[in-house]
Amino acid sequence: MAEERVIDGRGLMPPEPMELTLTALDGLPDGEELLLLLYCEPQPLYGILKQNGYTHRSQTRPDGTVEVRIRKA
Amino acid sequence: MQPGLSFEQAPPISVPFRFFLTAPLFGMAAGLLLLWQGPAALASRWTGVALALTHLVAVGFMLQAMCGALLQMLPVAAGANIWQPQRVTHLTHAGLTIGTLLLLAGFLSEQALFFRIAVPFMTVSLGAFALIVLVALFRTPAKGPTIVALRIAVFGLIVTISLGAVLASSFGWQLALPLTEITHVHAAWGLGGWSLLLVAGVGYLVVPMFQLTQPYPLWLTRSFSVTLFFLLAAWSLTWLPLQRPDALQIALACAAALLAAVFAGVTLRLQWRRRRKVTEPTLLFWRLAMICLILAAAGVALQQLKPGEGEDYAGTPFLLGVLLMVGVFMPVISGMLYKIMPFLNWLHLQRIGKPGLVVPNMRQMIPEPRMMMQLRLHLAALVLLLGAVPLPWLVYPGGLALIASCAWLEWNVVVATRNFARFSRDLEAHLAQEQAPSA
Image 1: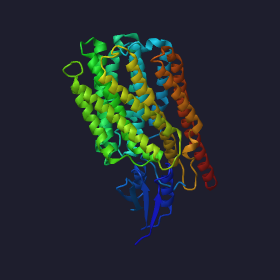
Image 2: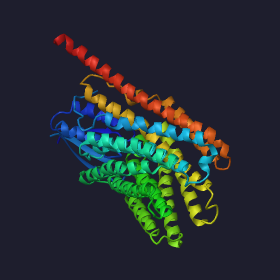
Image 3: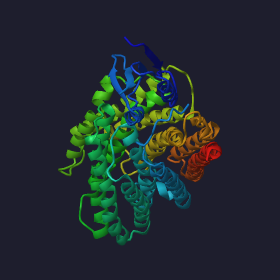
Image 4: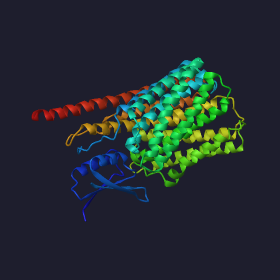
């Protein structure tokens, strides 16, 4: 089971969550997953991930938190 | 910081910025018209001056900024790709800018020729914009309440444009049409069906994102836009027999006003309970707008419940017009520009950069004290223009304050644009310097 890194962007002012995510992805080893927590769907990030060879899965928790799991495609 | 990812999805920054640079100019023009006409501007909502003022703000300022924001936001935030974005941008910007000038000339000169040119020009340019955006919104894989609200809002824009074209045609070709009834429905769809639903749809995204609140409650986001749409549609149908308002019409209008007030109340509550108590200009602009929305909703309900009182008095429509346009939509738009423009600058600067190169952060794009100054000027304009209802001479300082607020906004937009150019040059020069030794 690969280790999971977590970025909780729920209390951060944009674009800080995206900056942290992009930095974390820079050093994300193959097979590892990055978990991003937000209160909205990060559409700008999705476009960037798709264009740069990353896949993501997202789901919404009952409290409105959006979980985005990112890994290399 | 920049990890070498590409950011090609965002359209060129010139796409939205030309709209943002143009919109405040029409706000300034509205202030100038108020100064020129003085208390005569308040005489009736049906004078050419009142109609020119309304359209300077509603089309020249509001629609201009809203179209620019939508063209940028749809691909970036909603994953919806616009067909031929550059051509659509040119067409829409020309339609809005020249179209507003044509309407202004038509209303002030009462010459039919201006309306005869405006009708085909604005119908084609703005109609094409609305249809292309609607298609993009139906083709996007993204889901959720924002997309639903935006689809209905753009439909509302199409209704507004269509009725506007009918009204302008009647001025251009002297057609015998029930102008009063059509005007009521045109205004309701423009302010409620298009503008308010757009604010709600965008608000579901940006209020939690930029103001660090909890998300909007599901019961609201699931029901607000659809309910408002059906209320507006049913209310519009009650005008068809061309009779004076009946009980159903009053009930529907009051229900729509109550719904708008609920949206505003929920937004204020979310802001009040936000996680990080950071008070910044956009939050304050939104707070002002939501308070004005509640006041305007109460005003609409009172006007419906006591239709006989002051029906011919222009004060009530002027009061509601100022509350909605200067109190609700202009502040929301100003507040959003202060988030959208720095964010776009940041996003586009990332495209220039490369690993290890630090891109300036959002706070460096427009200094916060400058935004606060515009908020104060705008608040002064709002209070003075509301005060002009009982004290008409206040229209002079009110008009001056409106010019000052819009001029300040324009300068802030120019500052953001210049900072983008400056930071772009700096980054490119830095990159060229790094590459020079190896060349």
